[in-house]
Image 1: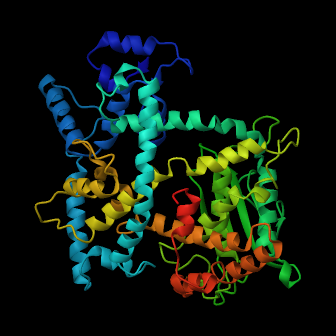
Image 2: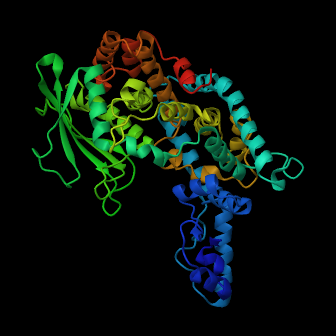
Image 3: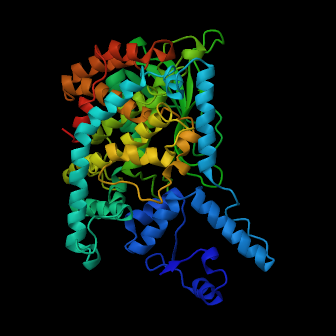
Amino acid sequence: RFLVKEAETEGDEEKKKEAEGMEVDAAKGPWRITLDGPSYIAAMQHMPNRDVRKKVYLGYLTRASEFTASEAEAEAEAADNKGEETKEEKAPIGKNNVLIIEEILKLRKEMAGLLGFDNYAEMSLASKMAPDVASVTNLSNLILEKALPAAQRELAAATDLARATGGPEYSESNLPKLMPWDTSFWVERLKEKTFDLKEEELRPYFALDAVLKGMFGLIERIFDVEVRDATGTVEVWHPDVRFFTLHDESDEGKHIASFYLDPYSRPADKRGGAWMADCLGKSEALGFDVPVAYLTCNGSPPVGDKPSLMTFREVETLFHETGHGLQHMLTRATVGDVSGINGVEWDAVELPSQFMENWCYDKPTVYGFAKHYQTGEPLPEEMFEKLKEQKTFGAGMMACRQLLFGMMDMELHSNFDPNGEETIFDLQRRMAEIYTPYALPVEEDRFLCGFSHIFAGGYAAGYYSYKWAEVMSADAFGAFEEVGLDNEEGVKEVGKKFRETVLALGGGVAPMDVFKSFRGREPSPEALLRHNGLV
């Protein structure tokens, strides 16, 4: 049973009464499905009803397009004919981002021309690490060469499972290929079948205090920095907030930085997500020599007498944000505008954060904190192995999807003519034929109308940055792998070099020069491909 939205029951009193009178049961329903991200993703991965999945899928991909605009007009016209006012929650007439996107692209092209650039992508890259569009394209195509065959194999495996267990509607005669609203569902079933590992089973092994202790031990091990709990010595904005100080072991334990940690979700007064922000930055001019950071997460809070038990994804997020924090706190740049993360190019700023995530798959690091919060028993070996295997599950399709988004963005801002005959959706299909030929967009696909990253979020001609930074972070971690992760002296030596370059130099040195100072060469995607199981 599914609880339909009020708009769908309007005019049908029987259906409305039936929906309102249903007993709510978490296991049996009814469930309310919206087009918000978490609801949409859950529905696509777990909803067995194909018709509902199709409806949700098309609803999501036609948001803010001519489809929703025409529906709003039709509803308004029908209401007007009845002498009624349309309800506020309905899409207003003209809520069509296609026209807005076209105008944005025209204005960006014009702005780039006024500033002496051939196109907006060239202007965007002038302040980034990537030297030109060709470099982004070459890296994307190099990764595609390995990722596309893997993606095709992954889709074939999901299709085989659907054919074998999905019943007659998934037979080849009834369904020659999985449709876009089928893929996520069957990939998720394949993942469950392959690993038989549920997120909740891991929580007891990841108590926050133990994870913090293990992570601080890693920081001391590779960067020679001790983290001390100083909670209670400063004022905080909520009882959950903790305070820590960093001390340089190579300089007689000198206090060099501090940070606040706000670890738990508080839906009533705290926005979602996770982030690092600077409280005080190092600045000789302002007399600030001890930088202070805010590390904010939205992890699982303690419940009753149980401590905060984290999902593995929450553990990765904590390591990620700590990576950002370390670049802010361990900087040696003394000019405020380029100290820490300030002035670091957009496509390089994720290097330290993604680098730290790699340690979540290093066995000695994980077993330094992964113990059952009640019994003290270490995480079972088979669970850790499954965690590592899950990391590479679906890596081919995920990589191809990210490459499509990045190159679609770059093409829109470099070679696309907003005054030409080709539409933005023609371009989307053209790029999909290159990067996701196994999953071409359906005719109604209006994904670009909701691509807020590049039209409202600061990633215009910059979405490639996600993959660019992944390449650098994986290659940086590769330096530790090359000396041997169990080679304590080697790890300390590489860690010292990472601290003195990537974490210390800030935005005053070009990121390519910073990376070459650490690695001795330009970044290579080889480590990323290896970590993702694509070689």
